[in-house]
Image (cartoon, rainbow, N blue to C red; front, side, top):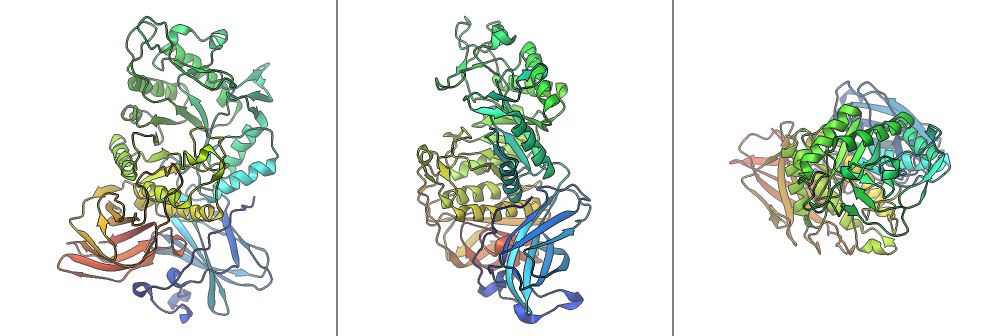
Length: 597
């Protein structure tokens, strides 16, 4: 299957501290070509590059397909496979002028490693174009989750589904939440004579085709993505008693049990949602049997378990107060014992996250709302989750961009999305945002906002960056306090502030990572960019940094999704009297400076 996602054409120029040997220097010893990402041209010949999977198990070959914008001229591809800033292997691939070039590479057997594949087109001894694509070698998708979604399951052509999955593959998405695919929350799969029905209405009365759901799961598996079956852990339709659900299993707003808790929905929908007690053993057994029907007839890999946040004081069928977070923990542990699949559970505004972290979830998932409006709150949640998960569970944010702007037709605001992703990724988290479209509302089928081409292209590089540098961004990565960081050319701050560059440090793999996120021209410090008016930052050039570093620094390098297609480039530096000084050529949204000791 062929992706229709075009590689971003990032403008690349040389800059003082980064100008190394001339690109025209020919070959180095051992047949290596002297190519430096910051000096490579970005031309119009390499249209887009794909791989056959979004994630690879150790030992799997990676199959590349490079599509050209023009045919007939030919040339040579210099292909470099890099882990962080080190070239682990290099090869050349002949281009005979055909529209596509295909080749394979088998990475080392090492598990849980990210790579960047750099591709340079050489013609007449000159590098004329440059493209990148990241590769994730991980036996378990939950280690480095890059979570996407699907929300439309009407009858559709296979080619339409293939295009959706191909696009998500190019974004390196390795897990997909199948949102509102189910018939009723208490009876998700509609059966007809013991077999799945061919179609059914979901809660908003949109039709769902069984063949569409099944084919999406199969296509996801072909790209080594996990398919997650979405459902609440305590939801029942108003007609649930006719299907065997008992009212006394419910959650009630009063000790007299007169008012069952419920989630109201529009009158045109199939039902409001009545809430059941997740700790009630009979309700657990009922819902687990229903979910077993799902896994028997559809090859989902796991269950994405949803909740509805803090519900206030609640009572069970015996008029006893219910500790809802503890009930979540009871439910999730019982679910894993009853159905041994992958689990993810939503923590709405962090509600119950401390308890969820004690259950067998693949990672921690936080749906962010008004209680956490600022960019700083995103980092605080990621840091809190790292503590809840004892450093073993990474974070995925469900965070809806341009929320108010999405009340009517329009476009996503590129600066708002990229600044939010920069903060999330630098903080060690990822963002549930990409599906058939992009999320602006908690109701995933909302498609009022379209994705401008510049944002689509930029996000390809951002997700390559998240994947290629996963071992620094979220592989046991810990906070690091730096005694002193100063800059010439911009004002730094250790918290997000308007008019300043936010700087904070992390450490992993024996390296220190200094993250610089540019709020110099920002109009708001609220990540959601509700009105889609976040300003595009003006590029900062030749930013001179001084960093306190008593230990001897062996190497310094820069990686940014905003330039060089995300390739790492080495930096010249000086170390004297316990301080390291270096110059960053450019800062747009986010730079990551890496110091190796």
